[in-house]
Length: 144
Image (cartoon, rainbow, N blue to C red; front, side):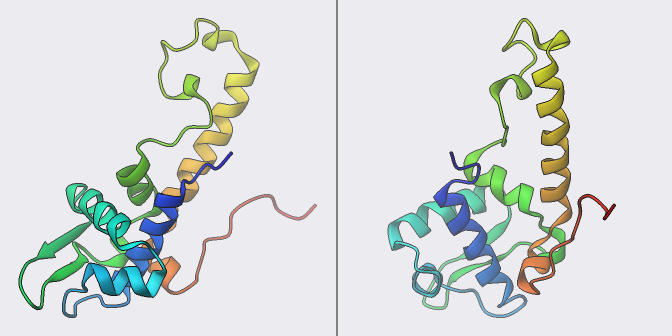
């Protein structure tokens, strides 16, 4: 089971590729697709979703392409993930309170809910700038 789908992985790599060109000329879809080994047609669809989510901006013409809509430090992983695959959830019961009638008293749901909060917090804390600089925020258990 993949939590992050292949398209989401491609989108994250495409966003990092655009971040390398922050405040420069727009980058063409074909250039990003080639650099990141993303099938061109899929790259087009990914950029459409990122544009719709207002994470990137497009420009037309011979020098057109895509660029980030804001600083790489202002775009986090969760925003990219949700733009491509929608809300991420370990289990359906965590998305909608009406999914399971046992949710209020369910120990499984409570445990998964804690993990879900941790995952969301982590993805919100890591920015595209962090990825670009390969500077992931380390979080987790302290040594005993």
